[in-house]
Image (cartoon, rainbow, N blue to C red; front, side):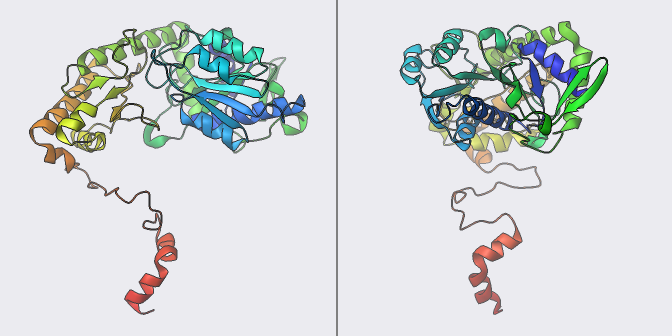
Length: 397
């Protein structure tokens, strides 16, 4: 199954090999960062090539993992079209460029139509290109990262390939790369020859970065993703992609009818495919109700709190629903109806939203001091360590 899953992802991406050790998207980004480091070190260029280029709306795990691997990070800002201008990349690339780590679309849902030129620019400078494919649902079976020139990419099996995504995991960040980078990938890899399978471990791959996680990774999730992909087949995957785009644009049509809600980059009229970021900034200005309050109130109606945005918030009070291909129209309509109801409450009775949730086991949490680590502790042992003197004063022991 591991070998078969790798082959199917290679077909969808154009890459030559996948590994499944990484425990999520950020872990896969780290795999790329250390693989890039090993590649340049093997060529004797690591001291010179110490910069990774990314963008402000690429997931911040790409910048963070590049920094954790020892690289300097250059972050490009957005232009008027919702993505950084090509001129900004031209100014950033140099003989110091080790690579580019980028998401396309970014988390606004906007695709960069110049992405092939971006890849060519980085390659001309001697760098490698990594495609963060977290938002693959809208283009699966229609776009292959390798055909755009990328050297490596990542898929989230828990977001695109039907493995459960509840509670933040368990997750799998499937990392794939070209044959040129394969010697540096984590091991073990499953090999197939003559109808039998074997493991190529670290002792057989002297250039490998080693292991980035426990030996196999989250195998149960790989089994689920493998089963889904095999059962869907090529036509099913293409249909699921179409459905993801249809659902997202259906949601956009209805959501933009809600007072206080607007779309990011409203002047950009091109279709958002798999996801769209919205803003409740106008609602917050009008009512004082924040997007966190909206989250808390929505769970009173039996739906998960919607995801907002990664940092930094370029859109005020962001909210980012992702319909994907999973939900039937009845569920989409219910979700939209709940958000519309809560937004209406914000205008008519804001206190009921600000004091939510009202029907959950846990009430609202005071987050005003969340950035003061001396004031909070996640365990009793940590609390005693931080507040030992105060406890002695209270108890006399």
